[in-house]
Image (cartoon, rainbow, N blue to C red):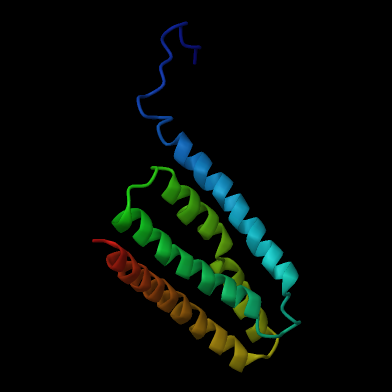
Length: 147
């Protein structure tokens, strides 16, 4: 294989077009993950105890996602990087279904079958309810403010 001749190597059009989105998601994800970690330090789960902090982090994060999605898609035009930064980045990094899975496994493996199964079922139900109720409340609030 030989090196390309000078001036013949071209970057495909659009190859770097998503770089600002990737950067926004990356920066936001770091901020969200740091906030989640801070929450877990503030309210650590007791050994083999119900992981309330992560439960509420996931529920609150999902509620904020519901508010954000209504605000940026139905209420007013937003900067194109706002949704990737806040939604996928900050709130995606803040909510943690990987830690949820580890916590469920830890509870079940530690013999806490009842709390493990409750956590397994309650987290997705509460998270979906939070998204739906926050999005609905935001829509109602926006409609009241519009003439």
